[in-house]
Length: 171
Image (cartoon, rainbow, N blue to C red):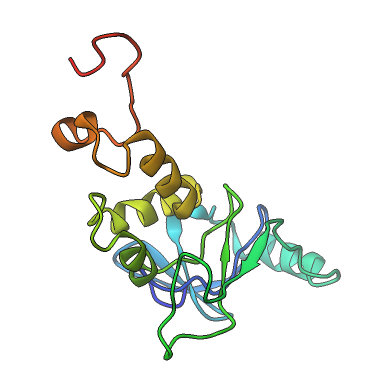
């Protein structure tokens, strides 16, 4: 990410077992990367410097592996609108296990005026902690909670119908 927090823009996606070098570990657990940007420390395994040097040399001998996900370029007809000051080349990722590249502001625009307004940070937390695309999580929440208007959503804070499996699901 560009800054050491969940609401910061995603600048790159790393694949499993790719070795990166950190120059500093911040108090909040984020790591400042030598090549620029930040990664949450809970997503990395620390290794000894001697082993890292060997692995970095090996991975530099071949092209950087790219994550596999589908991208859809944004345009004025899509759900997420863009102010004139935003980067016109930004794309959102729709693959369930790829980062969405959505910011807090993007999610606020989607949720503004809805019964789900205010869950933006939670959506990005789910994405960061479990690797599930924030827009996918939002879509499931909207579907399962009638856009946040169901009785379970309003009174039990249950957006996904968890454990609501029988005729007395509300109880």
